[in-house]
Length: 272
View 1 (cartoon, one colour):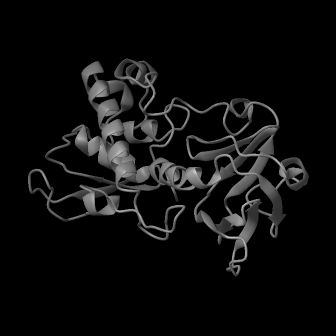
View 2 (cartoon, rainbow, N blue to C red; view 1 turned 90 degrees about the horizontal axis):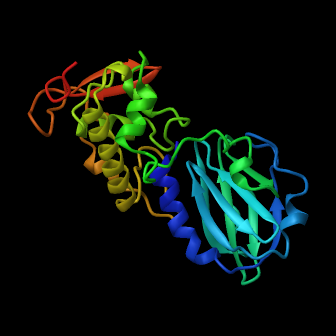
């Protein structure tokens, strides 16, 4: 599933091609995605100019004069720019045809993604209104995480993967961030000190920032908006490295499950 670095990579890839472009029309071939594509989308957006291409968590926001198109990639969704006359491929469900002769294709083989529309401020949308701070915002600090962790027996890995606490820390990046911060993923969140929370927030920003610079992580079928794979998987230190030597101390990486998710850690660098 594309996580924050992958979605940000896609945003950066498509934004230069979309900003200031008029949407001539929208073609919806398959409206039955995770949530139905709104019937009014095509008529509401036709003729509108794309003013901004933003991201909130894992949602992409295409802002036009009269509202916002909200796009979620689900587990297998892709957004790619191509000439409008390019032959369609399987699972091209929604096309944003631009006035300059190009097209933004939304392709989703599993149909867990979404293309939605709102005329209200997007932060008030039911899918976005309860999201926590962005990991790069000043609001996401060590003291903030420490306060949110107080009294919680939940594993710290599960806490930082909760989008109501902070957005965009998916399974891969939670594993990697906890390793960088030298914190065991099963540690009850309420047991972390302020110093550990400060170390963890810094680690989350470091890992996500590095992943964005590498174009995300390609473990299955992720590609950027311009068709390029991500390369962060070459820099993974614990994720999917069970029994391999820790890159820091040489101890074999161990695996467990937390919240039904595969979890990887070094028992020496991340003592429980």
